Image 1 (cartoon, rainbow, N blue to C red):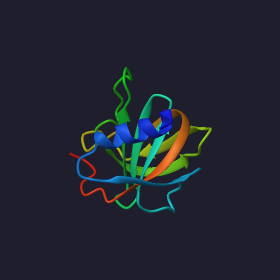
Image 2 (tube, rainbow, N blue to C red; image 1 turned 90 degrees about the vertical axis):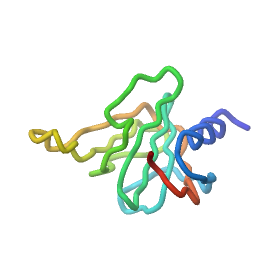
Image 3 (tube, helix red, strand yellow; image 1 turned 120 degrees about the vertical axis):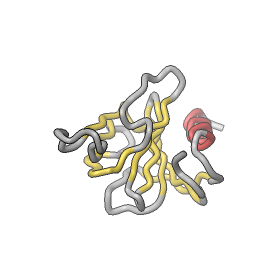
Length: 122
């Protein structure tokens, strides 16, 4: 099993419910559907494009980010293998003076579908 496969499987362990890994692709957009893991050098990013939401799953030694608890996804500007991921999220309810929040990831190394996940977030 390669390092990327290990990281993807390890990331699904941190999600609630039962799921398995499906097909891979090189890019995600807001036109897509389903649940996906975008693996970066230091973390995994769980996208539920049906919700739409994004949750960062920090890797070992990664610092905490505002997306760790899950956020409503606003846009996916870039989520492509080989490039830094860039997307925006809706503000939290108490952030009345914020239009949206940005996230920029380290370069994406793999994008894999998550199948059969019963519950994505705690």
